[in-house]
Length: 499
Image (cartoon, rainbow, N blue to C red; front, side):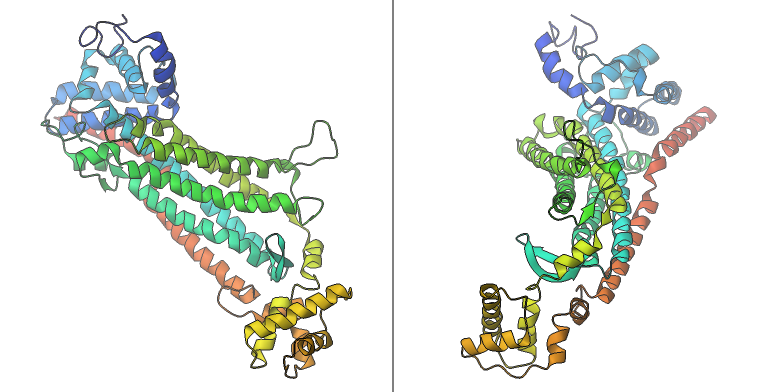
Protein backbone atom coordinates (compact mmCIF):
# COMPACT_ATOMS: atom_id res chain seq x y z
CA UNK A 1 0.00 0.00 0.00
CA UNK A 2 1.30 3.45 -0.94
CA UNK A 3 2.00 5.64 2.07
CA UNK A 4 0.85 8.60 -0.05
CA UNK A 5 -2.80 7.65 0.35
CA UNK A 6 -4.66 9.47 3.15
CA UNK A 7 -5.33 6.97 5.93
CA UNK A 8 -2.49 4.65 4.96
CA UNK A 9 -1.15 2.82 8.02
CA UNK A 10 -3.87 4.31 10.24
CA UNK A 11 -7.54 3.77 9.36
CA UNK A 12 -6.89 1.66 6.28
CA UNK A 13 -5.18 -1.71 6.00
CA UNK A 14 -5.27 -1.55 2.21
CA UNK A 15 -4.97 1.22 -0.34
CA UNK A 16 -7.61 2.14 -2.93
CA UNK A 17 -8.56 -0.35 -5.57
CA UNK A 18 -7.24 0.61 -9.00
CA UNK A 19 -10.80 0.66 -10.32
CA UNK A 20 -11.69 3.31 -7.75
CA UNK A 21 -8.84 5.65 -8.52
CA UNK A 22 -9.16 5.12 -12.27
CA UNK A 23 -12.77 6.25 -12.07
CA UNK A 24 -13.83 8.37 -9.09
CA UNK A 25 -10.41 9.76 -8.14
CA UNK A 26 -9.53 10.41 -11.77
CA UNK A 27 -12.81 12.31 -12.20
CA UNK A 28 -12.04 14.48 -9.18
CA UNK A 29 -8.60 15.30 -10.58
CA UNK A 30 -10.20 16.69 -13.74
CA UNK A 31 -11.27 19.77 -11.77
CA UNK A 32 -7.67 20.41 -10.58
CA UNK A 33 -6.93 23.08 -13.22
CA UNK A 34 -9.84 25.08 -11.83
CA UNK A 35 -9.18 24.91 -8.10
CA UNK A 36 -5.51 24.01 -7.52
CA UNK A 37 -4.16 27.56 -7.53
CA UNK A 38 -6.88 28.74 -5.17
CA UNK A 39 -6.26 25.78 -2.87
CA UNK A 40 -2.85 27.35 -2.39
CA UNK A 41 -4.44 30.67 -1.43
CA UNK A 42 -6.88 28.87 0.88
CA UNK A 43 -3.94 27.15 2.62
CA UNK A 44 -1.98 30.37 3.16
CA UNK A 45 -5.00 32.28 4.45
CA UNK A 46 -5.84 29.42 6.83
CA UNK A 47 -2.30 29.32 8.22
CA UNK A 48 -2.35 33.10 8.69
CA UNK A 49 -5.61 32.74 10.62
CA UNK A 50 -4.10 30.00 12.82
CA UNK A 51 -1.08 32.19 13.55
CA UNK A 52 -3.27 35.19 14.23
CA UNK A 53 -5.28 33.14 16.74
CA UNK A 54 -2.17 31.81 18.45
CA UNK A 55 -2.84 28.21 17.38
CA UNK A 56 0.57 28.03 15.66
CA UNK A 57 3.59 29.82 17.08
CA UNK A 58 5.01 32.77 15.17
CA UNK A 59 8.30 31.03 14.43
CA UNK A 60 6.73 27.79 13.23
CA UNK A 61 4.02 29.72 11.40
CA UNK A 62 6.52 31.94 9.59
CA UNK A 63 8.45 28.92 8.36
CA UNK A 64 5.29 27.17 7.18
CA UNK A 65 3.81 30.25 5.52
CA UNK A 66 7.10 31.01 3.75
CA UNK A 67 7.15 27.48 2.37
CA UNK A 68 3.54 27.74 1.20
CA UNK A 69 4.25 31.06 -0.49
CA UNK A 70 7.27 29.60 -2.28
CA UNK A 71 5.15 26.69 -3.55
CA UNK A 72 2.44 29.13 -4.65
CA UNK A 73 4.86 31.28 -6.62
CA UNK A 74 6.25 28.21 -8.39
CA UNK A 75 2.83 27.60 -9.95
CA UNK A 76 0.52 24.62 -9.89
CA UNK A 77 2.03 22.96 -12.96
CA UNK A 78 4.81 21.56 -10.75
CA UNK A 79 2.37 19.53 -8.68
CA UNK A 80 2.08 15.97 -10.05
CA UNK A 81 -1.43 14.54 -10.13
CA UNK A 82 -1.78 10.84 -9.38
CA UNK A 83 -5.29 9.35 -8.97
CA UNK A 84 -3.78 6.68 -6.71
CA UNK A 85 -3.06 9.47 -4.21
CA UNK A 86 -6.60 10.83 -4.37
CA UNK A 87 -8.16 14.16 -5.31
CA UNK A 88 -6.57 17.56 -5.90
CA UNK A 89 -6.37 18.28 -2.18
CA UNK A 90 -4.53 15.04 -1.35
CA UNK A 91 -2.14 15.37 -4.28
CA UNK A 92 -1.33 18.89 -3.14
CA UNK A 93 -0.88 17.63 0.42
CA UNK A 94 1.64 15.02 -0.77
CA UNK A 95 3.56 17.69 -2.69
CA UNK A 96 3.60 20.00 0.36
CA UNK A 97 5.06 17.20 2.47
CA UNK A 98 7.85 16.77 -0.08
CA UNK A 99 8.56 20.51 -0.35
CA UNK A 100 8.01 21.71 3.22
CA UNK A 101 8.28 18.58 5.35
CA UNK A 102 6.21 17.39 8.32
CA UNK A 103 5.27 20.96 9.27
CA UNK A 104 2.92 21.00 6.28
CA UNK A 105 0.58 18.90 8.41
CA UNK A 106 -0.36 22.02 10.38
CA UNK A 107 -2.27 23.24 7.31
CA UNK A 108 -5.12 20.83 8.16
CA UNK A 109 -5.75 22.07 11.71
CA UNK A 110 -9.46 22.73 12.24
CA UNK A 111 -10.28 22.44 8.56
CA UNK A 112 -11.86 19.75 6.41
CA UNK A 113 -10.73 19.03 2.87
CA UNK A 114 -14.22 20.07 1.77
CA UNK A 115 -13.75 23.52 3.29
CA UNK A 116 -10.52 24.19 1.40
CA UNK A 117 -12.03 22.89 -1.84
CA UNK A 118 -15.18 24.98 -1.35
CA UNK A 119 -13.14 28.13 -0.75
CA UNK A 120 -11.07 27.44 -3.87
CA UNK A 121 -14.20 26.69 -5.88
CA UNK A 122 -16.00 29.84 -4.77
CA UNK A 123 -12.95 31.92 -5.59
CA UNK A 124 -12.63 30.50 -9.11
CA UNK A 125 -16.36 31.01 -9.66
CA UNK A 126 -16.00 34.58 -8.41
CA UNK A 127 -13.13 35.20 -10.81
CA UNK A 128 -14.93 33.71 -13.81
CA UNK A 129 -18.21 35.45 -12.97
CA UNK A 130 -16.36 38.77 -13.04
CA UNK A 131 -14.90 37.87 -16.42
CA UNK A 132 -18.36 36.93 -17.70
CA UNK A 133 -19.75 40.16 -16.27
CA UNK A 134 -17.12 42.11 -18.20
CA UNK A 135 -17.87 40.23 -21.45
CA UNK A 136 -21.59 40.92 -21.05
CA UNK A 137 -20.85 44.62 -20.67
CA UNK A 138 -18.80 44.55 -23.87
CA UNK A 139 -21.54 42.70 -25.75
CA UNK A 140 -24.18 45.19 -24.64
CA UNK A 141 -21.91 48.02 -25.80
CA UNK A 142 -21.67 46.31 -29.21
CA UNK A 143 -25.47 46.14 -29.30
CA UNK A 144 -25.72 49.86 -28.60
CA UNK A 145 -23.26 50.63 -31.39
CA UNK A 146 -25.08 48.48 -33.95
CA UNK A 147 -28.51 49.72 -32.84
CA UNK A 148 -27.43 53.36 -33.23
CA UNK A 149 -26.45 52.64 -36.85
CA UNK A 150 -29.86 51.23 -37.76
CA UNK A 151 -32.43 53.60 -36.26
CA UNK A 152 -34.06 53.98 -39.68
CA UNK A 153 -33.35 50.54 -41.15
CA UNK A 154 -36.89 49.30 -41.70
CA UNK A 155 -37.83 45.63 -41.57
CA UNK A 156 -40.70 43.28 -40.90
CA UNK A 157 -41.15 42.09 -37.36
CA UNK A 158 -42.04 38.43 -36.96
CA UNK A 159 -44.39 36.21 -35.05
CA UNK A 160 -44.54 32.51 -35.97
CA UNK A 161 -41.79 33.38 -38.47
CA UNK A 162 -44.39 35.33 -40.48
CA UNK A 163 -44.43 39.04 -41.17
CA UNK A 164 -46.29 40.74 -38.34
CA UNK A 165 -45.80 44.51 -38.18
CA UNK A 166 -43.26 46.99 -39.55
CA UNK A 167 -40.40 47.89 -37.27
CA UNK A 168 -36.74 48.90 -37.40
CA UNK A 169 -33.68 46.73 -37.12
CA UNK A 170 -32.58 48.89 -34.19
CA UNK A 171 -35.72 48.17 -32.21
CA UNK A 172 -35.67 44.50 -33.15
CA UNK A 173 -32.10 44.03 -31.95
CA UNK A 174 -32.86 45.81 -28.69
CA UNK A 175 -35.41 43.10 -27.98
CA UNK A 176 -32.48 40.69 -27.65
CA UNK A 177 -30.27 43.12 -25.77
CA UNK A 178 -32.66 43.86 -22.92
CA UNK A 179 -32.57 40.35 -21.38
CA UNK A 180 -28.77 40.46 -21.56
CA UNK A 181 -28.79 43.73 -19.63
CA UNK A 182 -30.89 42.01 -16.99
CA UNK A 183 -28.44 39.11 -17.08
CA UNK A 184 -25.73 41.53 -15.99
CA UNK A 185 -27.77 42.12 -12.85
CA UNK A 186 -28.22 38.38 -12.37
CA UNK A 187 -24.47 37.87 -12.59
CA UNK A 188 -23.89 40.63 -10.05
CA UNK A 189 -26.28 38.85 -7.69
CA UNK A 190 -24.43 35.57 -8.30
CA UNK A 191 -21.10 37.28 -7.56
CA UNK A 192 -22.44 38.58 -4.26
CA UNK A 193 -23.57 35.08 -3.34
CA UNK A 194 -20.31 33.27 -4.11
CA UNK A 195 -18.37 36.09 -2.46
CA UNK A 196 -19.37 35.02 1.05
CA UNK A 197 -16.72 33.17 3.04
CA UNK A 198 -17.26 29.56 4.17
CA UNK A 199 -13.84 29.53 5.87
CA UNK A 200 -13.24 28.26 9.41
CA UNK A 201 -16.43 26.21 9.55
CA UNK A 202 -14.71 23.27 11.22
CA UNK A 203 -16.19 20.76 8.77
CA UNK A 204 -19.87 21.23 9.67
CA UNK A 205 -20.52 22.67 13.13
CA UNK A 206 -17.57 24.84 14.06
CA UNK A 207 -14.34 24.01 15.87
CA UNK A 208 -12.80 24.44 19.27
CA UNK A 209 -9.67 25.67 17.47
CA UNK A 210 -9.38 29.45 17.80
CA UNK A 211 -10.03 30.91 14.32
CA UNK A 212 -11.22 34.38 13.37
CA UNK A 213 -13.75 34.01 10.55
CA UNK A 214 -13.84 37.75 9.91
CA UNK A 215 -10.05 37.90 9.58
CA UNK A 216 -9.84 35.18 6.92
CA UNK A 217 -12.85 36.57 5.05
CA UNK A 218 -11.08 39.91 4.80
CA UNK A 219 -7.84 38.25 3.66
CA UNK A 220 -9.70 36.52 0.82
CA UNK A 221 -11.66 39.70 -0.01
CA UNK A 222 -15.03 38.09 0.58
CA UNK A 223 -17.89 40.53 1.13
CA UNK A 224 -19.05 38.71 4.23
CA UNK A 225 -19.46 35.33 5.87
CA UNK A 226 -21.79 32.39 5.33
CA UNK A 227 -22.67 32.40 9.00
CA UNK A 228 -24.14 28.96 9.64
CA UNK A 229 -21.17 26.59 9.52
CA UNK A 230 -23.10 23.60 8.16
CA UNK A 231 -24.83 25.68 5.51
CA UNK A 232 -21.44 27.14 4.57
CA UNK A 233 -20.21 23.70 3.56
CA UNK A 234 -23.10 22.85 1.24
CA UNK A 235 -25.18 25.94 0.24
CA UNK A 236 -26.85 24.16 -2.70
CA UNK A 237 -28.69 27.29 -3.80
CA UNK A 238 -25.33 28.89 -4.65
CA UNK A 239 -24.67 26.38 -7.43
CA UNK A 240 -28.25 26.56 -8.64
CA UNK A 241 -28.34 30.37 -8.73
CA UNK A 242 -25.10 30.61 -10.70
CA UNK A 243 -26.18 27.94 -13.17
CA UNK A 244 -29.61 29.52 -13.60
CA UNK A 245 -27.96 32.83 -14.49
CA UNK A 246 -25.75 31.08 -17.05
CA UNK A 247 -28.75 29.32 -18.60
CA UNK A 248 -30.53 32.66 -18.91
CA UNK A 249 -27.56 34.13 -20.79
CA UNK A 250 -27.24 31.13 -23.07
CA UNK A 251 -30.98 31.19 -23.77
CA UNK A 252 -30.71 34.83 -24.87
CA UNK A 253 -27.70 34.08 -27.06
CA UNK A 254 -29.41 31.02 -28.52
CA UNK A 255 -32.54 32.95 -29.49
CA UNK A 256 -30.70 35.57 -31.51
CA UNK A 257 -28.23 33.02 -32.90
CA UNK A 258 -31.14 30.92 -34.20
CA UNK A 259 -32.56 34.07 -35.75
CA UNK A 260 -29.29 35.01 -37.40
CA UNK A 261 -28.86 31.50 -38.81
CA UNK A 262 -32.21 31.94 -40.57
CA UNK A 263 -31.37 35.48 -41.64
CA UNK A 264 -28.06 34.26 -43.06
CA UNK A 265 -29.82 31.77 -45.36
CA UNK A 266 -30.22 32.44 -49.08
CA UNK A 267 -34.00 32.47 -48.62
CA UNK A 268 -33.75 35.47 -46.30
CA UNK A 269 -30.38 37.09 -47.06
CA UNK A 270 -30.92 39.66 -44.33
CA UNK A 271 -27.44 39.13 -42.94
CA UNK A 272 -23.95 38.22 -44.06
CA UNK A 273 -21.47 36.93 -41.52
CA UNK A 274 -17.83 37.94 -41.64
CA UNK A 275 -15.57 35.19 -42.97
CA UNK A 276 -13.81 34.90 -39.63
CA UNK A 277 -16.93 33.51 -37.96
CA UNK A 278 -17.81 30.94 -40.62
CA UNK A 279 -16.28 27.87 -42.22
CA UNK A 280 -16.73 26.17 -45.55
CA UNK A 281 -17.86 22.67 -46.43
CA UNK A 282 -15.34 19.94 -47.15
CA UNK A 283 -17.33 18.75 -50.15
CA UNK A 284 -19.26 21.89 -51.23
CA UNK A 285 -16.80 24.72 -51.86
CA UNK A 286 -19.50 27.35 -52.37
CA UNK A 287 -20.67 27.02 -48.75
CA UNK A 288 -20.07 29.64 -46.07
CA UNK A 289 -21.56 27.98 -43.03
CA UNK A 290 -22.53 30.04 -39.93
CA UNK A 291 -20.36 27.91 -37.70
CA UNK A 292 -19.94 30.42 -34.88
CA UNK A 293 -23.71 30.73 -34.51
CA UNK A 294 -24.13 26.95 -34.69
CA UNK A 295 -21.56 26.56 -31.91
CA UNK A 296 -23.48 28.96 -29.66
CA UNK A 297 -26.73 27.18 -30.45
CA UNK A 298 -25.21 23.81 -29.58
CA UNK A 299 -23.65 25.05 -26.37
CA UNK A 300 -26.96 26.53 -25.26
CA UNK A 301 -28.44 23.07 -25.43
CA UNK A 302 -25.60 21.52 -23.45
CA UNK A 303 -26.36 24.03 -20.70
CA UNK A 304 -29.77 22.42 -20.31
CA UNK A 305 -27.97 19.21 -19.39
CA UNK A 306 -25.55 21.02 -17.09
CA UNK A 307 -28.48 22.66 -15.32
CA UNK A 308 -30.09 19.26 -14.79
CA UNK A 309 -26.79 17.93 -13.46
CA UNK A 310 -26.41 20.78 -10.95
CA UNK A 311 -30.03 20.50 -9.83
CA UNK A 312 -29.92 16.73 -9.47
CA UNK A 313 -26.63 16.52 -7.58
CA UNK A 314 -27.75 19.24 -5.16
CA UNK A 315 -31.05 17.54 -4.40
CA UNK A 316 -29.39 14.82 -2.35
CA UNK A 317 -29.49 15.10 1.41
CA UNK A 318 -26.79 17.35 2.83
CA UNK A 319 -23.47 15.80 3.66
CA UNK A 320 -23.38 13.76 0.46
CA UNK A 321 -20.39 14.23 -1.88
CA UNK A 322 -22.75 14.68 -4.83
CA UNK A 323 -23.60 18.18 -3.65
CA UNK A 324 -20.26 19.69 -4.53
CA UNK A 325 -18.16 16.93 -6.09
CA UNK A 326 -19.77 17.41 -9.48
CA UNK A 327 -19.93 21.17 -9.17
CA UNK A 328 -16.21 21.71 -8.57
CA UNK A 329 -15.46 21.07 -12.23
CA UNK A 330 -18.83 21.42 -13.97
CA UNK A 331 -19.69 24.96 -12.88
CA UNK A 332 -16.30 26.54 -13.70
CA UNK A 333 -16.42 24.72 -17.04
CA UNK A 334 -19.91 26.12 -17.69
CA UNK A 335 -18.62 29.59 -16.83
CA UNK A 336 -15.79 29.17 -19.33
CA UNK A 337 -18.24 28.14 -22.05
CA UNK A 338 -20.52 31.08 -21.28
CA UNK A 339 -17.58 33.51 -21.41
CA UNK A 340 -16.54 32.07 -24.79
CA UNK A 341 -20.04 32.29 -26.24
CA UNK A 342 -20.69 35.86 -25.09
CA UNK A 343 -17.34 36.96 -26.49
CA UNK A 344 -17.94 35.03 -29.71
CA UNK A 345 -21.34 36.58 -30.29
CA UNK A 346 -19.97 40.07 -29.66
CA UNK A 347 -17.52 39.41 -32.51
CA UNK A 348 -20.26 38.10 -34.78
CA UNK A 349 -22.59 41.03 -34.13
CA UNK A 350 -19.90 43.68 -34.53
CA UNK A 351 -18.70 42.35 -37.90
CA UNK A 352 -21.94 41.20 -39.56
CA UNK A 353 -23.38 43.12 -42.51
CA UNK A 354 -27.13 43.68 -42.61
CA UNK A 355 -28.81 43.80 -46.02
CA UNK A 356 -30.89 46.97 -45.74
CA UNK A 357 -32.53 46.45 -49.14
CA UNK A 358 -33.74 42.96 -48.24
CA UNK A 359 -34.96 44.14 -44.86
CA UNK A 360 -36.81 47.06 -46.47
CA UNK A 361 -38.31 44.71 -49.05
CA UNK A 362 -39.80 42.64 -46.25
CA UNK A 363 -41.11 45.78 -44.57
CA UNK A 364 -42.96 46.57 -47.81
CA UNK A 365 -45.10 43.43 -47.45
CA UNK A 366 -48.52 44.46 -48.79
CA UNK A 367 -50.39 43.36 -45.67
CA UNK A 368 -47.87 44.26 -42.97
CA UNK A 369 -49.78 47.44 -42.03
CA UNK A 370 -53.00 45.53 -41.26
CA UNK A 371 -52.77 46.03 -37.49
CA UNK A 372 -52.12 49.73 -37.88
CA UNK A 373 -55.13 50.10 -40.18
CA UNK A 374 -57.24 48.50 -37.46
CA UNK A 375 -55.84 51.04 -35.00
CA UNK A 376 -56.55 53.81 -37.52
CA UNK A 377 -60.23 52.81 -37.77
CA UNK A 378 -60.56 52.74 -33.99
CA UNK A 379 -58.83 56.11 -33.58
CA UNK A 380 -60.89 57.93 -36.19
CA UNK A 381 -64.29 56.37 -35.48
CA UNK A 382 -66.35 54.87 -32.69
CA UNK A 383 -65.75 51.35 -33.99
CA UNK A 384 -64.78 48.66 -31.54
CA UNK A 385 -61.59 46.75 -32.28
CA UNK A 386 -63.36 43.52 -33.21
CA UNK A 387 -65.33 45.31 -35.90
CA UNK A 388 -62.19 46.99 -37.21
CA UNK A 389 -60.45 43.60 -37.21
CA UNK A 390 -63.28 42.10 -39.30
CA UNK A 391 -63.12 44.91 -41.85
CA UNK A 392 -59.36 44.71 -42.37
CA UNK A 393 -59.45 40.92 -42.36
CA UNK A 394 -62.14 40.95 -45.07
CA UNK A 395 -60.11 43.46 -47.08
CA UNK A 396 -57.10 41.09 -46.91
CA UNK A 397 -59.29 38.19 -48.02
CA UNK A 398 -60.65 40.19 -50.97
CA UNK A 399 -57.16 41.27 -52.00
CA UNK A 400 -55.92 37.67 -51.90
CA UNK A 401 -58.92 36.40 -53.88
CA UNK A 402 -58.55 39.07 -56.52
CA UNK A 403 -54.74 39.14 -56.42
CA UNK A 404 -54.71 42.82 -55.54
CA UNK A 405 -51.56 44.60 -54.37
CA UNK A 406 -52.24 45.53 -50.76
CA UNK A 407 -54.73 47.95 -49.27
CA UNK A 408 -56.54 50.95 -50.69
CA UNK A 409 -59.05 53.17 -48.97
CA UNK A 410 -61.67 51.91 -51.39
CA UNK A 411 -60.88 48.28 -50.59
CA UNK A 412 -61.43 48.98 -46.89
CA UNK A 413 -64.75 50.73 -47.59
CA UNK A 414 -65.86 47.77 -49.73
CA UNK A 415 -65.01 45.32 -46.97
CA UNK A 416 -67.05 47.36 -44.48
CA UNK A 417 -70.03 47.36 -46.84
CA UNK A 418 -69.80 43.59 -47.29
CA UNK A 419 -69.93 43.18 -43.51
CA UNK A 420 -72.75 45.76 -43.08
CA UNK A 421 -70.57 47.87 -40.83
CA UNK A 422 -70.90 51.64 -41.04
CA UNK A 423 -67.54 53.19 -41.71
CA UNK A 424 -66.89 56.90 -41.11
CA UNK A 425 -65.03 58.98 -43.62
CA UNK A 426 -61.27 58.46 -43.30
CA UNK A 427 -59.19 61.34 -44.76
CA UNK A 428 -56.73 60.31 -47.48
CA UNK A 429 -53.88 61.90 -45.52
CA UNK A 430 -54.65 59.76 -42.49
CA UNK A 431 -54.86 56.60 -44.59
CA UNK A 432 -51.62 57.36 -46.44
CA UNK A 433 -49.72 57.93 -43.19
CA UNK A 434 -50.83 54.48 -42.06
CA UNK A 435 -49.47 52.66 -45.09
CA UNK A 436 -46.17 54.58 -45.42
CA UNK A 437 -43.63 52.71 -43.28
CA UNK A 438 -41.45 55.66 -42.12
CA UNK A 439 -44.56 57.70 -41.28
CA UNK A 440 -46.11 54.74 -39.53
CA UNK A 441 -43.04 54.12 -37.38
CA UNK A 442 -43.02 57.80 -36.39
CA UNK A 443 -46.62 57.45 -35.17
CA UNK A 444 -45.46 54.97 -32.53
CA UNK A 445 -44.62 57.39 -29.75
CA UNK A 446 -45.23 55.21 -26.70
CA UNK A 447 -42.49 54.30 -24.27
CA UNK A 448 -40.30 51.50 -25.63
CA UNK A 449 -41.73 51.64 -29.15
CA UNK A 450 -39.89 51.44 -32.49
CA UNK A 451 -40.00 55.21 -32.97
CA UNK A 452 -36.33 56.23 -33.45
CA UNK A 453 -36.57 58.76 -30.65
CA UNK A 454 -37.80 56.08 -28.27
CA UNK A 455 -35.04 53.75 -29.42
CA UNK A 456 -32.47 56.48 -28.70
CA UNK A 457 -33.88 56.82 -25.19
CA UNK A 458 -33.48 53.08 -24.68
CA UNK A 459 -29.90 53.26 -25.95
CA UNK A 460 -29.23 55.90 -23.32
CA UNK A 461 -30.94 53.77 -20.69
CA UNK A 462 -28.71 50.87 -21.74
CA UNK A 463 -25.66 53.10 -21.44
CA UNK A 464 -26.71 54.04 -17.91
CA UNK A 465 -27.02 50.35 -17.00
CA UNK A 466 -23.62 49.66 -18.54
CA UNK A 467 -22.09 52.55 -16.57
CA UNK A 468 -23.47 51.06 -13.35
CA UNK A 469 -22.01 47.68 -14.33
CA UNK A 470 -18.61 49.31 -14.90
CA UNK A 471 -18.83 50.79 -11.40
CA UNK A 472 -19.55 47.33 -10.02
CA UNK A 473 -16.38 46.06 -11.71
CA UNK A 474 -14.28 48.92 -10.35
CA UNK A 475 -15.45 48.32 -6.79
CA UNK A 476 -14.07 44.78 -6.80
CA UNK A 477 -10.95 44.93 -9.01
CA UNK A 478 -10.80 41.13 -9.04
CA UNK A 479 -8.27 41.00 -11.87
CA UNK A 480 -5.44 41.89 -9.48
CA UNK A 481 -6.58 39.84 -6.48
CA UNK A 482 -3.69 37.37 -6.64
CA UNK A 483 -1.10 40.15 -6.58
CA UNK A 484 -2.81 41.84 -3.66
CA UNK A 485 -3.00 38.59 -1.72
CA UNK A 486 0.72 37.84 -2.20
CA UNK A 487 1.47 41.32 -0.89
CA UNK A 488 -0.67 40.60 2.19
CA UNK A 489 1.26 37.39 2.81
CA UNK A 490 4.61 39.14 2.51
CA UNK A 491 3.46 41.91 4.83
CA UNK A 492 2.26 39.33 7.34
CA UNK A 493 5.61 37.52 7.15
CA UNK A 494 7.48 40.78 7.75
CA UNK A 495 5.35 41.47 10.81
CA UNK A 496 6.15 37.99 12.14
CA UNK A 497 9.85 38.62 11.53
CA UNK A 498 9.70 41.81 13.57
CA UNK A 499 8.17 39.86 16.44
